[in-house]
Image (cartoon, rainbow, N blue to C red; front, side, top):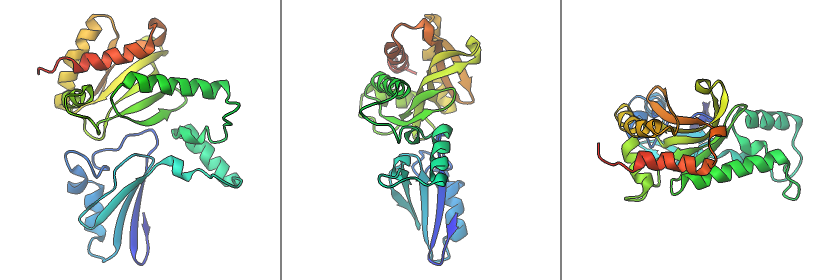
Length: 259
């Protein structure tokens, strides 16, 4: 938090983690203003006469205002230097951010005429995942030492689309519908697996589980759970067409709309 004579600015930095409802001004349940960050900021500084701002670094959140509190987001790409040389401190910071989960910093020195095999491979993975998502709006790209993937956004769904059906079934807790990508899983002795996760509410989790059980019964993968989140995983080596597998899982959860 930064406080000056006229302003109070609260910064929330996000890397791989999604926004919690208490951190998200646009959360469905309005937890942000009831008992979350918004409530704390307004109750603590709303009577000071200072301009209040809440800034989310690293996420795509529409700007807006709640009472006296204005909010907006700044994506990581805005921090890249377009001209001039990086200082040693900047280089160390950007390299660290890239490793921690902001991949835009890892590719900042890549030359278009001579991309490395690793960079080309990463781009191909993200392009595959984008195609697999179909009409579902994707969010932040995430990567780390043991995973690479894309967030699925719960916003921007058009009526009667697969995206809208998935959102209704999953009933996500925030602006992230789920995640698609690659990660090692203990269930398969740390083999690299294709994964599709849904960030459900408790009610939505039951509906998603019913649909995933049909896929599991057809030996399309194994159901995994983490709190109210639920997903399907399958060793990547067992799947010939990775794009189709991900698309089939998303379609399998969306195609049966009856509860």
